[in-house]
Length: 303
Image 1: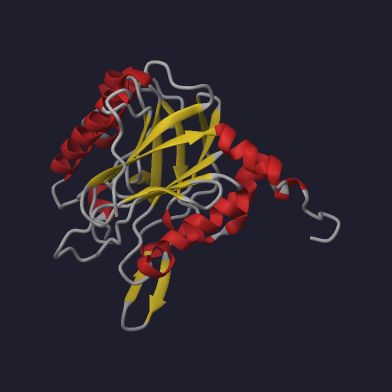
Image 2: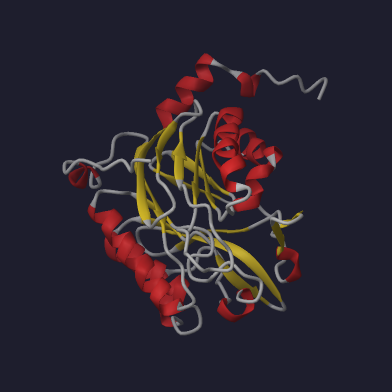
């Protein structure tokens, strides 16, 4: 599918985005066994997206680490708590190189960076964690995947994240230019209640979902789930996948997409490394909610 290419004029727009809108770049990155190379590749693509005018740049699930239970402990980093200043993050770059690199590039380019997910070591446990960095490089939001991917499709796909990972226990949002953005990771997208909570109680306009669906579930459900959650909650949904790597033990579906609140595909791509761009507008969300006020018409006396 085509990747929407932004016009040259969009570079100037980054300094003065329209009221209550921003340009989103979703990075579909190739991930290898070389952690340092993965970090360098991510930074290069963040730089490219920023140069093309993106205000918010989102990375895929497990962008620094192959998607494998065997690899999660090896690649895991401690991640500081939200609110950590950029200088503190960079001063301990040896302990958390992935986090420090994203903090640094966010500050250097004055953009929001949504760090897909990395395996996080917290005490004795490991989590699948997304970190968000402000244009000053501060860690402003941190979300750990709530629903662990434990599935068994005989003859096709068996994976148990719970063999190594623990589930998170809180939601996370942040704001950009008057737009509230919620976070979810991969398998979380199958749980409508989470997205309804974000829409009704947190007032989100957009949910970013770093995710690595596989070649069994991807063709059946990847686009369907994004469009379903978008229409259900009248929000933008963008699921950001790693690129597919031939020969890897886990074959990612790719097809990173941005879906609008009407369930329309704003932009998408195939399975190779790519950047997908789309404009997120609060007015688009509010317009749909005014025309089809389903969120306020729920019968709480019955359900």
